[in-house]
Structures are given as C-alpha cells and as structure tokens.
Image 1 (cartoon, rainbow, N blue to C red):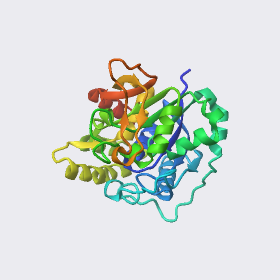
Image 2 (cartoon, rainbow, N blue to C red):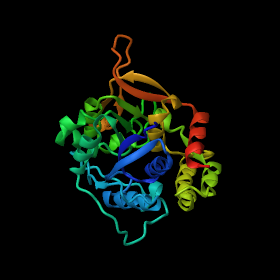
Image 3 (cartoon, rainbow, N blue to C red):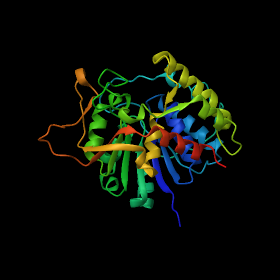
Image 4 (cartoon, helix red, strand yellow):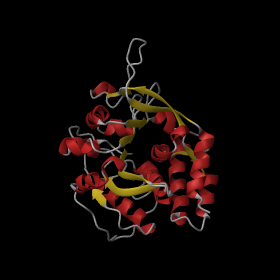
Length: 310
C-alpha cells in the first residue's frame, strides 16, 4: 500500500510558498502534518493568515497552523516584499476577520514524536524557525527522516544581493546553523529554482479544472507575481516558483541534477548571506545534496499531473 510522505512545512507565504502549499494539498503522494509560519516574504501575522486561508479553501482545517518567529535571531535587518508578494497572497486578501485556530510552537515536538523517521522537515522561508528546532529540541531533530531547504546560490548571482539569495540573506546566522546541523539535507538553490517557471498557459489550465481547490485564486495570484518578474526580467515567459520545486523533488528527485558538498553561509556584512562550498580539487566531498540544474520538461509534466487532477 502506498503511504504519502509526511511533511512538516516551515514557510513564509508569500506567493511561491503558496504555490508550494497548493501543490502539496493537491498531491496524493504528500501529507502535510503541520505548517509553521514565520516572517520573510510577509510579516509573520500575514503569513499565518495566508496559510490558514489556503487550508480553509481545501477544507483542511485539521492541519495545525503553528506561528513561528517574527524576526531574525541576531540581525536587525527585516524587510518585506509587497511588490513581489503583495500584502496578502499577491492581490488576494484573506477574509477579514478570518477565524482559525493556531497551535503553540511546542506542537512541533509532539509532531516529531508522533511520526519520527517518517517525517520530513521542509523549509521554504527564512531559516530562523528551523534553526530554533535544533536549539530547543536537539534530540527530536535527530529523529526526523530528512530535511529540505530552499536557499542559496552557487557559482551565480543572488536575488537579494549580488552574492546572496533572499532566504539565506534574511538570517545568515540561522541558515549557517541549519546547514551545519541538519542530516540527510537537500538544498534547492537558485541554480535550479530560477528555472522552475510556470507560465500563464499552465495557470489558466489549472483555473479551469473543476477538481482544483484553488481554481479561483491561482490566476490573479500568478498575474501579480508575473507582473513583477516582467519588470525585473523583460521577455520572461512566466515566473519562477522556487519553493514549489523544493517540495516537488521530495518524491521526484530526478527533476534535478545534484552535487554533494558541505555548505557554508557567510555572516559578515560584505558577503552576508552568500552560500559557498569548497570545491577545490583537493577538498573532500560532503553529505549535503545540492540541486544544480532542472529538467524543465519533467517539471512541467509533474506540475500538470498534480495540479490538473482528472
């Protein structure tokens, strides 16, 4: 009998986080067992409301929504991105007031105890909340099966600065702590995720599917996101959904090619948030799996398979 992968998601929805959540809610091969919401693309309170709204649209108010952290551990840098992600989910504001239940942060400990080696922790936002797990519950952190983190950029420019990707830039201290602490770790950096582009044609097809929970939501959210990327990269034929790729490769690792190295995240000002590896010929290979390329045709096929249920 097939058993769906059990995922505890750390996120900051945000449009691309929201696409990842939509995909997971539609995928019978994934079971979300909790969502931890923190600052990042939007403030923590908005991220929490956005996640709760997405659960309500899918009729899944049983999934625990766990408010996480509001700011980085040490740095006083805190920026949000309404020009990219809006003040809700793009142009969509959850109903106000939105009634939903939240759970204390300690719920994470009980979720890990319940599922143990069945559980996969996925982080598509800033690393602060996930780092806190290793600090508060170090023995529990050892129990989970594996970790997936969206972050970093290797051998290429960042998207927050010339050197740094936004998640690692938002709290480099926590990111460096996570990549050094997590076992069975897979990182999806910009090397792969920037090519995970969904197009207007793909989204329009989803909006017409009668079995799609998010049919009415997906077009205006995509158009808001796409409008930003058209201004940023004139001529682009869609918008990259970085966080979606991170969850897709859990069950479909062949979507990407990988290298294996130990990862470091720089903390000092000039190179803050830069991810790097030691790939000199004399260096040893590491255990962290890093996605470095994407099979785009396979990505589109898998997106359509899940988001266009028959």
